[in-house]
Length: 85
Figure 1: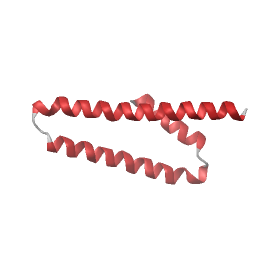
Figure 2: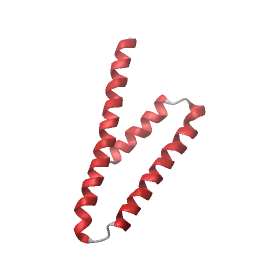
Figure 3: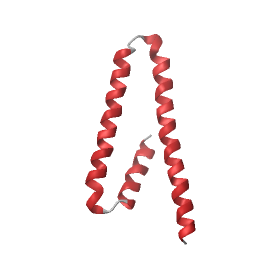
């Protein structure tokens, strides 16, 4: 997860012009806080130990979705780069 976060940060720094980085970073931070809030709400709504497995499955689904979206973006960007050269 830390490597993925570092990769996203590097992509943001390389692909976004300097004047727009603050806006994009603000939106990214807002989305991070929103997902953190969703995490807290899920834990509060399912506090019993027997619900832990469901919370883990939901977490894995969210992380897998994020990775899939990143790999899809990377594949499309690589293909676009090949077509331009």
